[in-house]
Length: 171
Image (tube, rainbow, N blue to C red):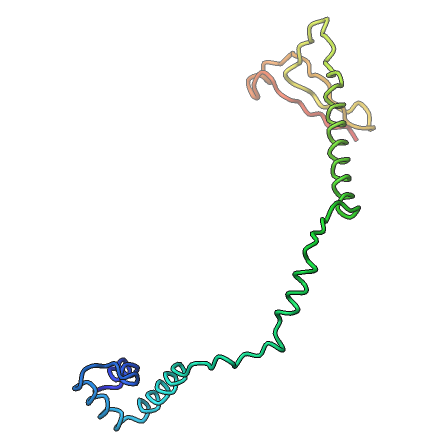
């Protein structure tokens, strides 16, 4: 018999519950040869004997019991005390309500304002020229003005009908 086979049936052998005489003899022979299984068998036997011993009825002492102290606390605790409202709990609630009310009032006042509308157009818009010339008549800075709509035959052939002409200031 091998150790793993013997260890499977060791608890049954220790409790005398194996029921098969041949298996009993095999386990006895294995225990005579194997010291590790013998130690395990002794441990199982001692555990079973510890479980078999019943506690005597008078072993519990009530001198150091918690029950008298618990009985006093239960008797004193019959009065239910309500937590109620205190300033520590009411102050944050009131502050939150004030903030919510302020947000509601500011939103309502913004919604009540009249909508600013664009002024009505009385005259039609002027057409926007399609090209611009950048020029600097003096050295103060560059300005942009509409280019003339006149194009020369040379310009139209090279760059298209609508171009941007750049004139750099003379130095």
